[in-house]
Length: 73
Image (cartoon, rainbow, N blue to C red; front, side, top):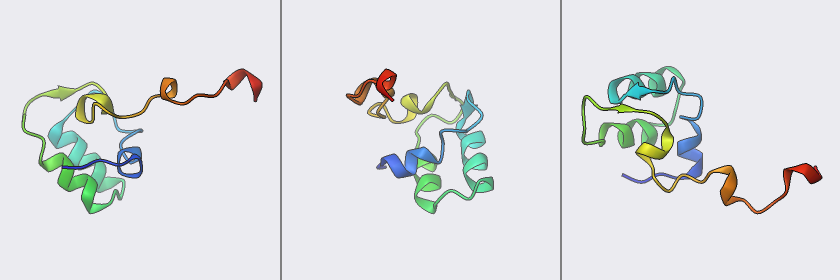
C-alpha cells in the first residue's frame, strides 16, 4: 500500500468517520483512481471505524506542515 497527496486527496471529502467498506464504496462512487480503491482494500482491520485520513495514512500532511502565514494572503 502506498499513498501520495494526489491519491489521498480523493478521500478528503469522504463521510468521516467511516469503515473500510464505506470508504471503498465512497471511492468507487466518487470516481477515485483504482490505486485508491486498492489501497483501501489492503487495510487490515475490517470492522474498524476510521475518524480521518490520518488514521489510514499517518504521514498525511496537515496545514501545520506547510511553512506559510495565512494571514499574509
